[in-house]
Image (cartoon, rainbow, N blue to C red; front, side):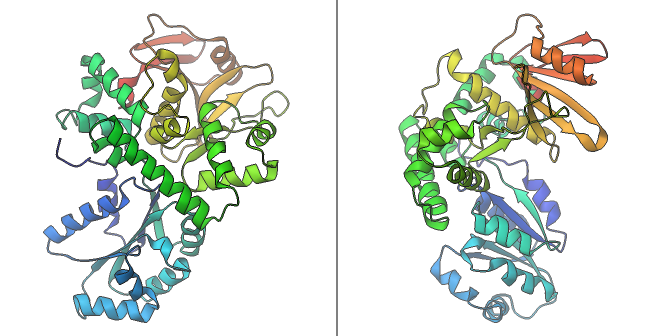
Length: 417
């Protein structure tokens, strides 16, 4: 399989190239931000448009960023004096000190340069750059390759316009794709690597680079070993409520330090803390978030279960983690939360668009359901909130059950592709 992995966000980025504001790509290391920029530039160059690419990991490029004047002189040398739009990419922008102020000044000069910026998920990028350029940029989060993109790649793009039909007609093949994805995750280099050992080596390199550069280097954590242990414990508890006191004791750090580490882990895009949904403060658990991993391969690596998920019991939480990402992709900008009550009723996810007063609960069941079954917890949520819809995501069952005013939809995985 020689072709590159097609990313669904590429057409969105292409459209944004027509707008004057800066295009800012953020996300974890090694998810393909640089590759996306190269793809964008190939399209621009095919139209005869001018492009310039800087990589601030390269000293030769970095030297032009000592001052705005020096950079502008370099651009004029490369493209000449022009009033035509020139597309300028700056990769690893977080390497530039005070990058936000630097880029804000360039943007405000009203020059004929369209800037495309990218960088890994360091706090320097997320907070100093992004907030400094308020109103002058649009952020695009570049996630690991999604399961839909992975299936599309594995089937040589033969079913790009009908992936759901492919999944419905080929359940065994879809199950095979799912097993591979749940084991190895969505980092592009891992996906295109051949064999389990090569994949493992690439994943270890990504993880080591993340801990050594983003965590130990940029963030200067005093105990990177404790950070690694925290990630491993979070991986073992993925999909369960986070108990700060218990976790801090297990890691051997104070609760305030643990909260800082969690903050770092989320800001550098290794985990997501799913917040609880609540209306009744007395009866619903309101404080404890639920951790999920941004990439399933990373979760398995830190848990020492890399490529070894084989039994049905291994897949429950990691499948739940996958469905969380699929819901976020399906409903961009809409909060996806969890729901727990003090009497132990729980629903995996609540898609909550409160601005429209629209919510629906989602339960996740790994496996092929033979008949529709609605759990007590889901019934409890339906009785309390009376949503128009409720979902039970599973492998194969496609069915609708009516409970009062609520349509309970049993949604097969292929329908989310």
